[in-house]
Length: 321
Ligand SMILES: Nc1ncnc2c1ncn2[C@@H]1O[C@H](COP(=O)(O)OP(=O)(O)O)[C@@H](O)[C@H]1O
Ligand SMILES: [Mg+2]
Image 1 (cartoon, rainbow, N blue to C red):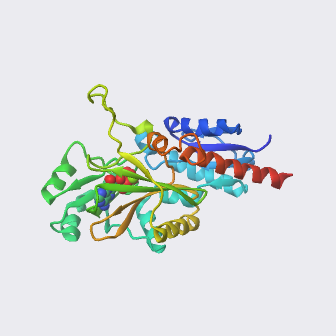
Image 2 (image 1 turned 30 degrees about the vertical axis):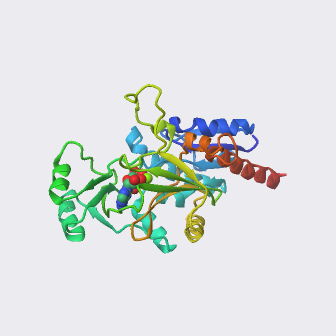
Image 3 (image 1 turned 180 degrees about the horizontal axis):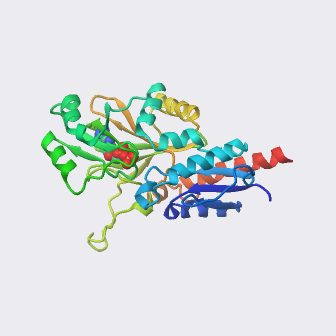
């Protein structure tokens, strides 16, 4: 069989934009839905380019072991020398914010002050000890879509939440307490990279609360909006980010086996740029791309990904010839 593109994932709802972009280019591709699988380690995988889109939030869709299955699959693919985009190093960071922050800091990228807590009975005491009377963010080490990310203004509210019905212990047992970053403007920025290079940045208006996920598939309701009224443009593409930040981000990605990712940061009131989330499985906002005149072009997220995958596939063909 001739080489093809294989997308490793566990959420079919996030595939259509990529399917469309690949098909527009007439590229051969298949999906590897990593929830169930059977493969013989002694046999070679199919030929091709493998794009890993495993998500940190896979366990929230009933796929508790997809990350583990992906790690195993990536080991098999790399043992056979397959071209993997977002390989084992990327998965390692995708599922652990602590490992993300350690790697970001090594590359000169500042992260919010964060305290790791293993053991639910320690959370309130840790908040008191490390954050005193300051507001604090509670978030899971393995996160995604903003699930479990909450802001608390005092210890009593935090304690009540931990005892309440909405609290879900993190899937890996690791809870993070984090400095609440007061943004200079009510936005967060998500810098998108494809092929290890900066593509564009998406500014997300956070005045209505925390940003969750930019993909269409994550859009929440909106049904009680008055008829005829346009939805508020919460997502806006900006063409650039500070060049030092961009260079450091590109070096961080290269050093960590990541070629496609969205890196989220906040500019605080003191002028610091704090990076707090690395998404190696990134989804793009179609309305923002349309407004920026990028939809359906290689300047869109899915378009850039498809172009990159095509380049890598052609490289394989050239090597085989
Ligand atoms: N330290 C922080 N200070 C202020 N806002 C934050 C902080 N951490 C997260 N947020 C807000 O919560 C959202 C979700 O947090 P994030 O760390 O990105 O979790 P996830 O991995 O689930 O996307 C962010 O996009 C941002 O709007
Ligand atoms: Mg995030």
